Length: 122
Image (cartoon, rainbow, N blue to C red):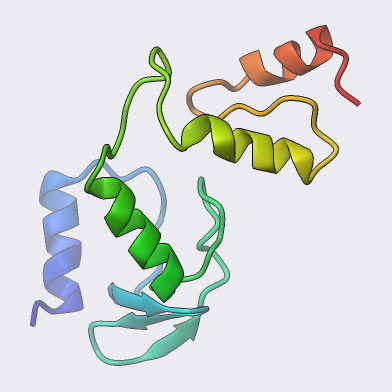
């Protein structure tokens, strides 16, 4: 097992630091908990950064990812793909939205709000 100090050394040599990291070196997650390389368990309050927080290793989510990865894993928005549009319909049908776009904040920090304003979002 690689020690926490060895991971920190690897980061200092090879990885551009963009945040100040917390000391634990996390190796796995299960539900709302994450586990470090020393076997300690922590309640995960940060899993929602840039993603929807679905917890860790939920069997239904894991199976869905495995199934989709066997078909097509990632594709530009220049093409129609399944299940992207059916999922957008489900999200709109179950929210106050009139349209939905899959994007990260890095991709479209201003385009999405402008598009919503142009289309008269509620």
